[in-house]
Image (cartoon, rainbow, N blue to C red; front, side, top):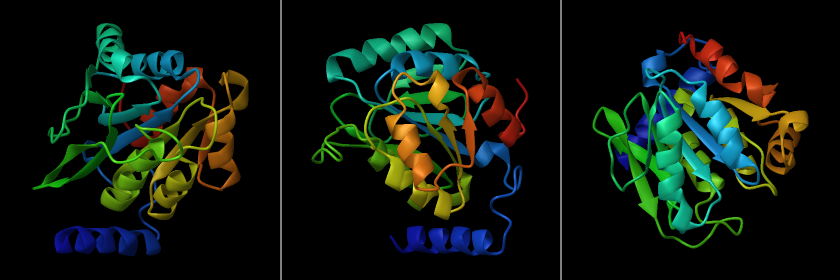
Length: 219
């Protein structure tokens, strides 16, 4: 715990000095992308992830979905994407080129592990009426990654993840939200935008491209 607090303090100091928000200020290989989605998210995730190259930074995804469907959904995405997509397991090493989808029965978050990070699954009570909850994933990104995080809020009903996306923003993360015109339901992106948590509002068709441009990663 002491090591985590010291790491977070270093991230906050860098942000306060004005360096952390600069595109490319940190190597892309150190970055982790976290994504939240709900209603309409299955199609949105397919569109976003299919635009990412095999060498893209690791991506953690929380999609509101019953547990009976997450494993097959991950397998379907894996067949369509250049990145490797799988249902997340507890304490997996997070590696570039991989997408980790929250299982429908557990919250997904992350924590430091040696020089890198690992996944964490939890069956703690629902947050914002959801398990898995986007709030849990984004809050862990804010606290564990700081400026190493890239947030992406896709279509969805309600406000799950909006407050934690603001925490990410305040910790130095760079955040994207899907625009209203391309959303099935604009609830979650709208709430994040209203809180001032979002740096760029992007159509779904351009989301992967804009994230890659920010990261300086070639297709």
